[in-house]
Amino acid sequence: MRSRASDSETPVWNQALLDSFGGDARASFEPGQAMPDRYRNQADRETACSYHWNGNVHTYHYFKDAR
Amino acid sequence: MRLVNVVKPTHICNLACTYCYSDDVRKPVMAAETLGVTIRETLELAKQYESVDEVDFIWHGGEPLVAGREFFESIVSFQSEFASGVRFTNSVQTNGTLIDSRWAEFFAKEGFNVSLSLDGPEEINDRFRVYRSGAGSFAKTWKAIQALRAVGLNPGVCIVLSRATIDRTQEILRFLSDNHLRFNVIPLTLSGSARDHYDELSITPQEYARAWISMYDEWIDAKDGYVYGHDFVVKTRAILYGKAADCIGMSNCADFNLSVDPIGDVYPCASLSGNPAAKLGNIGDAPLVDILNDERSTTFRNRAVDPQCAECKWQHVCHGGCMSRAYKFTGNINSRDFYCPGLFEIYEHVAGRLAKHSIAPGTRNRWHMTDGLDPALVPFKQTATKEPPRVIPIHSIREV
Image 1 (spheres, rainbow over the protein chains, first blue to last red):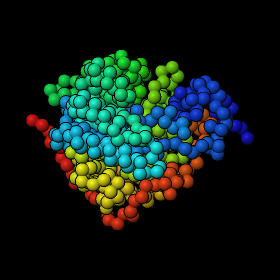
Image 2: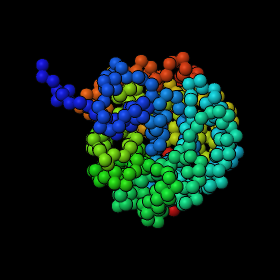
Image 3: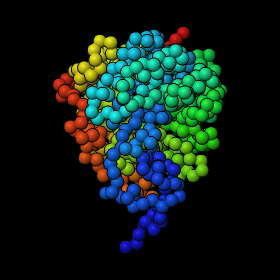
Image 4: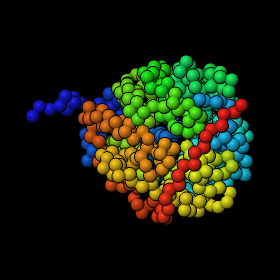
């Protein structure tokens, strides 16, 4: 079966993804680096994340989720 | 889990924005005694909730800086007196027009995060964010940004999506990127002054989704021009982790969110402040933990699952959307957010964009109905026995 175009590319981090994953990802990788499977794969993704109030820009900080 | 208290030092504002959401037209400034009790009770509540590891104090309004620097110095003093080991953060949401170098130095010294209300470039911002004279506020807010940056702070801005801005999102995003301004986008709410201008400013859920997505697509692909976009991050994060990442998507937001107004009245959300049907009690009358466990609070802390939500593929990240918006638009907290169809489009789109990066969405969190918490750790609450209160309409009063 022919793979999808996205499957044939090596996914890399960009800043938006790093901020969205937060915690370890934000602290461990740089934009442009390849994204390890453990981040791409739902089965291996850790599920801890807090929630943040939505009426303000600063209630989410990636460092707040590094636990 | 974070405990969020959005405290309103005053409802007074030196601006008269056309779309202001505030429903409260009373004018007091919070007394020092009320401030002290509010801080003490919030920190006490955090100590009693095993699942809470940090408190976010959000200083909101009205324009909170109208309360004056002494008031803010009292905040720091009371927190120091009552924290006893509880971790907390301070953020202020302000129009910025009163910020000078002394305010900036205070915020830097005391570690306050500063979020400014600004809709983008001057011409867009000054159409609605105005003084009572009609003069625009951009120039003064811009001075605030410069003053804050001069002391090493990096303020962000909150943008309201309305009919006036939904077709100019690329211009707005370029402005934010060029000026390195972190941002949040929030759709117009049916309350306060916005109610008086709703025909002119309202957007449909589909228009909201289209505007949001047009910004998101630029944002997620941005390279050198990347700036942090709060709502984009939390909605992406929700899809990644299989549960809500912001208060909008929580199953029971009122378990960990509250708001205290200038006279000490407690509400389940800052957006409902001033609505008598949503008042839970007064901070001076009873311990906060008791206020949050009485009958009225219980109805807000047990939001029912809408039948359509129960069938929705994104229920675990959305839970019917914003309870406050549901309440304002339909009169019932147990209904779905007015923007529900738009939120569905948004979550679909985010998942699609992640798929292009070969990133799978997170599995549905098994405890998503308790917002990711082990149910044993959810703060005690009684089962709701009464119908939720209906909206008592408040028609905003224009000052002469």
